[in-house]
Image (tube, rainbow, N blue to C red):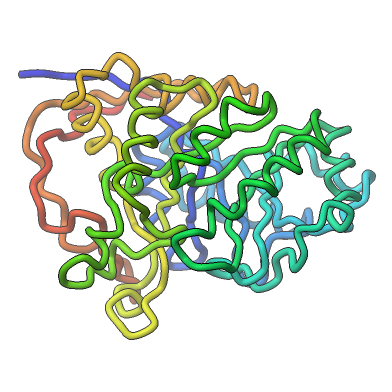
Length: 341
């Protein structure tokens, strides 16, 4: 029976939430991943050393025994002092910038993307070598929001050439093309954006569990993303943007944005790369690229997958929290056979 090994898989964009939801979804990543870059958009957002270290402790408690490292981030503010960032730099891997109100729990994000408004914090980050992670969307027409953000990425790259800038969860061919234009631009891409277009979300019966921000785009965009991932473009990393919401907040009017992929990510990626005869590139896409971009050594962990049917659970549940994964109830051709730490 066919098998494939992934060494030290990393998820470089992950939402773990907090409290009972963290207890539910944390182990669904930590069991099979060596580490993950954790988003700071809690309520309230993570902006202080005390909040950051407390959140990291809660994550470690939820994921204990799994051989998993949470890479912590701060929620961007335009007035972080050099002294504060210097003190906290050993505890974070980056700082996440959200335009205000653009996605879940981002209401206190940046209200103006004017470079001079952002300069104080970005200059301090540049001096200290702290990467900037960006949710790159405007408030324009929903299908054009990422494309409209490209000039802002260019301005950031030009004005802060020593700053590593990660374009998070890119969804367009425009963003893929920008990767090769500036040395200091990098990107993550999700599992679901490699697989779906807007047709899958709303082309027939509305599928709330595929509704996310940034919204899935056109076929040509998916093709560009998939090509870059399959070739393990050295500046592109896997970042699931796995974003759990309670079932009742997905299956309702005013559906919450987010696709929950943590429990199926490695199985589906293996299937996807195998179908395109690119399995030899999967370890780079899901592990090696991130270690080079962020300059760290991942915890050793070997995941052995086997070509054997895996039925995705209809839901995952803990206490009063219930979440529905992508492909709920469907059969996947690959399963996780073993995990060695």
